[in-house]
Length: 600
Image: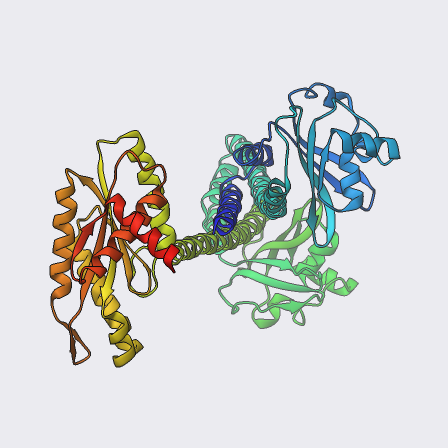
């Protein structure tokens, strides 16, 4: 029984340490805090004032010190290279891939055999555990003591091994969380840098807006437009204030630069233009030349004769009336043409001028910048949404993992509670069992030794006619009889008294806080009266009774077992006198029992 208790205590200690590790991995997100927290946790269970962790790379056979706390070599470790660990006990454990308990003599033997080299201050006791991941040793965790009074044993090694095994899992979780937070921080810094860049561009644009009214208006529009369509319409409004622009369009090259798209198009004679492959129209001419062009009817005819353009075939004007004057400027980003903004007039008495050409050239530069800004903002928006999605998914996974761990902890606690209850209670009646009763009896006996004024007595009960009832009516009725008897017993004793079933039809009660022996006799009589009442068990009415032996506590008792023995002797004396009664123990009863045993 003591071995089981020791094993239970050992399992409870290990489980407590693993729960602490799980909690550390759940709330620590910085590796700088992780190892000190592990050290503190290990120190709560072992003598671990001197503790260190070294990681090992099997591919390069190199060691890296992660954490070191030592009462003697804290300063010395700063001058020792990481390669030195390969020649000491740390490297020996990594090579052997086995835990190691090492005292001073074993250390000297390893040095003498050439397995290791003596390094640093010699320790009295050393314990090291290899750290494993995916079947490979990735490091060593060790504690050491310079005091010969504090050694380590196999139980410490088992506890330390369990801690080390779960430390790797916790280490990976903390590193993953640290990496995630670093990634989020890096992405946030990138977004801040992009935002700073945009803010700088806006400030530069605002400075330019003060130089010219038109530029100011366009710059305002680029900043205030919610989307590209709103921006294009606003630009069109600005152009209408600068020149006749009832007919206006913006054409953009696709990514392959083989097709034109028309995100904005308004014309009084032609329907909205459709996307089309590059041809020989005015728009393509400006793209090839990469400069603003003013084209009137005469110039258009000359360009057509030169083969630069084909009017009425691939130009915009193929859908309707030919323009009398056309003005277009390339949209450039970093000297690269991405499209064209153009206006045209169908009126025979109006042609665009060189001044309007300059305005268009000026406006187109800022439109291109605005498009670039809008595209960058859209890309930034998509990037931010993707980052937020990843952060959300990672956070959700962490929450699910934490919830799963909490559920596991709760289930383990419930299992522990059930195991403890089952180990200390009678399965049939729910009363305390022999083990639990004897433990509480020893504790209370020791208390009474220190505080003798606290009255105490033991009642030993034996049910009358149980064997007859069990044999004649069956085990089912016998079990029901015992359950009902336990209920009657609990109803007869006081709340702070301890009732237990020792086995079969034997019960014991520890009476506490008694004023006198008469209190114990009164409770015994109350129990007898309740047990005399008929039992109704599955349509069977049976009569029973109980014989009770009482052993009051007195200073002559040196062991709790003696009290229990005397209560048992008094009970047998009660049965001998005719059952259904109680008897208070007297020393002569012990002599009678010894005589009866000798006679047998």
